[in-house]
Image: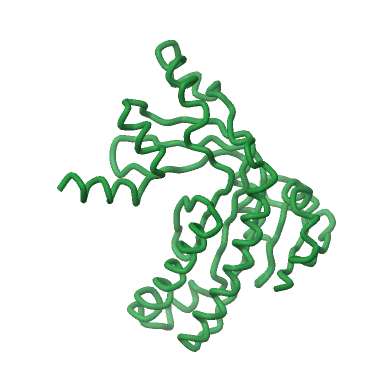
Length: 242
């Protein structure tokens, strides 16, 4: 029973977070200075849900999509945060162990009111995770094409990515989930909702981190666009070349 419980826990939370909780560190509230956040959404899924049988659309198609994406997360060394309906959220650049000793030293003198003062980490590999998440996004398109063909469907994927700081951790008393918060999350979500099917919509910060990947992506500047809650932003579209 203990082994089964351990497996379930490790399937819900990152292993290093589980270790920290077992040591008595809870709640987990970490400031991470630089991550890449990806939101992906299946275009037309809501409409299709009213037309196709749920056992087919969700029980087969969406099951296969999320299974394929989960495997890609492992392949690229990223962190799946959650699914929201047919949307999929992934973060790159999270390091769940950096700063643990500092957290422990400060916990006795810190209240939750000072959670934002937790040590900044996540800078290691700062140039690596933007590349990883771009290649992950490209692979998502390939997997969708494969699974569309399998079920004779024609869904598109809209992807948005932003790079910036977040607060990450585990809160609450029931049904623990590892999550991320902050304006960077909102910006990544806006990149997705303002994007185009079969393309990757990038914030300027994200573009600056990956614009050298010209062998893998074709980049196009969108100029300044109005983004809800953000005002004018200069954004970019990336089209995978492979």
